[in-house]
Length: 340
Ligand code: RTP
Ligand code: MG
Image (cartoon, rainbow, N blue to C red; front, top):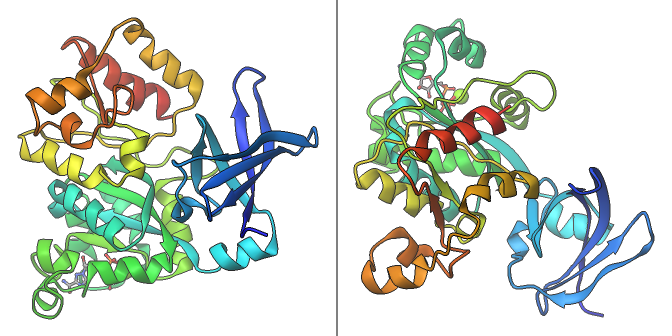
């Protein structure tokens, strides 16, 4: 029998307004998927080849797109799958500190190069009090005031990272706490490249699974409350959306780097999971607008984001606002309406 991995998956069906549960089977041999409707006890999707699923995306807690349905992988379907794919997966909290926020593109590339993936992301500016709460374990240290002052001095980008041994892997990417030491002993580490000294050291990483759980809850609360607010300004802005295919093809770092190198300031940044209803609502104004930009881009503007990272007219890597006056409206849609 072909090797197969089994998952319990949930999909929110907007037309019936309910959560449907499936068993999702994946066969690595030919990259095919099969779905079984748990409630009605019948096959929902016969075994079909589906190139857009990557084996490394298959673990509990992740979200995968199967034929336009966003499935939440909520459990392993059998012991074999849990042992093979689940045992070492962890989540950790990564934070880009104010001194390295403009390096977000390189940093996201380093995250993917370390075989971790970004499952949540949000730019925020912490108040003094929030930063002090976040670093409460260091309250009694001599560097506490400096640290809190620094971390609340400008925007930070908090991310949830997932992957094998995410806690220690991410700390390895960060390098030694003191940037001076990092420059000497680990020049390619994040702090070796982007840190300045012992306090201004570009990034933070949870130091244990317990800290990771607490720190993820701080930025991305699972139940009550909203967590620190986003940084959207709603003026002189436009809305850029990196599309799902570009994220799974690992272009996020390069795209962000290019946006910054072209002179833009990223004034707000967040990862959203859009359901079909939101996506249709957002794209309503574009109905009937024919855009063949990707092909045109490849010929006329070969260095543009769509020429470099787009595949076709739908999977064109990035959305950007068409009309200047819609920029603020689109930013509001994400950062006011969807960020609840
Ligand atoms: P982090 O918590 O930020 O990931 O860093 P870490 O585990 O490598 O280091 P930790 O001992 O937890 O210290 C937290 C942050 O405090 C600042 N610090 N300044 N000037 C100093 O002596 C000093 N020592 C630590 C750094 O920003 C460090 O990352
Ligand atoms: Mg620490």
